[in-house]
Length: 560
Image 1 (cartoon, rainbow, N blue to C red):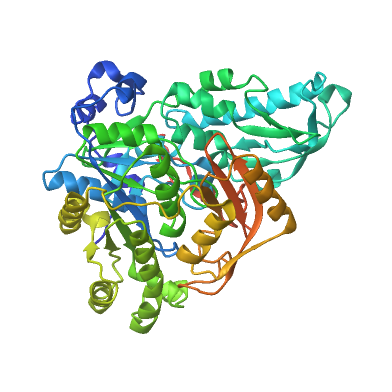
Image 2 (cartoon, rainbow, N blue to C red):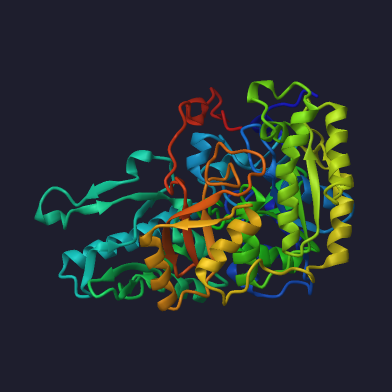
């Protein structure tokens, strides 16, 4: 089927006024803060107030280990929301906001694809409502206040060698990973090594996405640890008297953003932490608002189930007291063949043996989701090159060997009409389960090392973890400081169950090397940086930015 490009489809769409979209969730005009005709923020009063007595069923969309062949997780989230509405259910979608870094780097856009998109696509992918800019400003305000405190006498006795608060920018820029700041003389402060992370890796982003309300936001910001003194006492944002001003900058950003799908169904797009270096979920505010006003809420967590889904379950659901009722694991024949050893340029050729080998990756992800007590179903997103024999093999192995139903989905090419069967099955799964069987992977009162080991062995197939002496000491210090009950947020490559992105399939017996631990006391978790993952990405050899421009009519082209 000859389908136009994503941006062509989005630009041809007839969008409904945002008030009409909001009315489908019983949101009155007086609680909307419009950003033009097709975007609105939902006033915080409406997010705090009860809806119509509903408590919708929460459905997670996750995926197999991603590959350059493509899987389509966001597209499936949007398509499933449309599909549920098509079969007569009252459903809403909850997504993360795209980061400018990947948009201009590899992805070129992250609002779904084909006929399963959220719109207006260009605005969502670019500056949107300014949330990311507000997060970057709040984060960097704290950095400025910290350096200003050092400049004007350092009353708190901060040890400049033990400053943990880096600056952020919402762009991929490897040159900023490690810098020397404050050069140029006495008037510019005290020179020291520093660096930048991408905004979506900021703890401020994580805090905003996990905050329950403005009061909770300010409290979380205040307890963020930014440095230590020479006697190893922690220094927080509250100690620097920064939390109040940061909250002011974030007040509007905390309000969820409401947009629509191509079929005019409501979609909340709010927050955007990466799942390989942060917790990878949209905001708790948006999810709770949707659950109050829809019967089914479809959300996604970034990358494969080993990263995004695990953090969704162990961090977001634990902190937000959410009970997911079902999970969809997205896969494609092309990606499965790549995990079976087929080169990218050969993926259009039928290879049933490689497909069979690659299915081990999907099997592990399905099993991992079930470890949390959440019933799963597989969405096999169809590509034009897929043969019937390949599709039949995946469907048969899922049902016969993995014990899970699988459906061929064609929402990318056909919209909601291409995902009806999956929508019926997901609704039945969610209705039958209701979230009653959900359990996090580990209890909160086991040690941080035990949590790390549990994730590595039970989800990644590893034999265990390896740590340096510095990491061992850091584990002991965090436990002694009272942070041992926090969940773990693993930062590692999203392209393998191991910490080596070149290892495909479902490897076993490897060790997960823990390189560094970072405390995110405000967000409420400990980040374990594993392998060579970077918290500031770089651009690829040919960035998507090379192809993004305005045409003669002033329309954006090149986002895809």
